[in-house]
Amino acid sequence: ETGVTQTPRHLVMGMTNKKSLKCEQHLGHNAMYWYKQSAKKPLELMFVYNFKEQTENNSVPSRFSPECPNSSHLFLHLHTLQPEDSALYLCASSHYTTGLATDTQYFGPGTRLTVL
Amino acid sequence: AQTVTQSQPEMSVQEAETVTLSCTYDTSESDYYLFWYKQPPSRQMILVIRQEAYKQQNATENRFSVNFQKAAKSFSLKISDSQLGDAAMYFCAYRTTQGGSEKLVFGKGTKLTVNP
Image 1: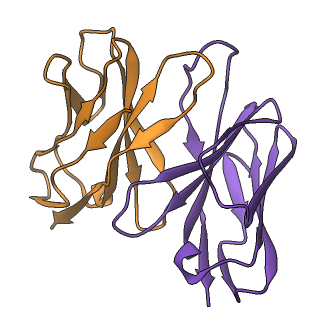
Image 2 (image 1 turned 90 degrees about the horizontal axis):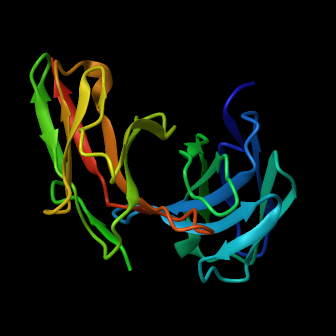
């Protein structure tokens, strides 16, 4: 596969469930991102990883827990979510050069999450 | 903090006609990047065009071009010879060039409908 892939594409979970979203990039990038896209709102950056290290946590509640085991994979672990967390979760990747912010971000297709 | 405003929630255009989507932003920085992303109904976010603020020349990609007015902090997207496949949500985004920050700030988007 090429580009940025995300699984699952759709997920329905209860508030007491624990689930994980997976993102994989095949572009040789070293930076990965999680975004939340809710209806009628701009995309919200959640987390940024550069070289597997988390460099940004945009005041995201602790019920969302990211994991980046290597520069190609990114996970978002979910537990005790709320109905208002229902949204499209987008993963993106880019090539990051230390000290510069120069490269374009490439997005995956997203996971449509519904919390009941 | 930087903000991005897209004042047109929805736009429509006839096939083969030209349409312009508007975007304004607010920043105190002198150097930055601006992007237009397209999100078709399948949800994969795709880069349409990007502009470096230090470049006076407007970026062009085939039928897509921008009108970048730095002093006015305006970054509009012109789509020429519109095609049915251009129907999508279009997002304007801003990114700083300051080292250590990969944060993209998005507008709320403009839904473009192309009428046959």
